[in-house]
Image (tube, rainbow, N blue to C red; front, side, top):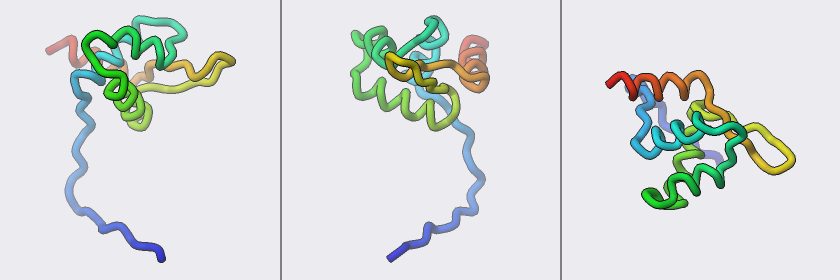
Length: 92
């Protein structure tokens, strides 16, 4: 049995990255060929592994990060949308 989703007529809210997501974007922007494990290690003392991985997943789904395949795993790259969030955060 297939259930239908309710139609929402609310105005969609723009995506606002959280502090941990901004930390992830900054970490990826500062590294060439950055893997998820590198981001986890860089943020490990202050952030939990599960919260970092969840943040990476959200940023990938919102197209702030791009995941490219390589022989050693998925390499994270910052997209132009992700760069805009970093620049906007630095301007505040």
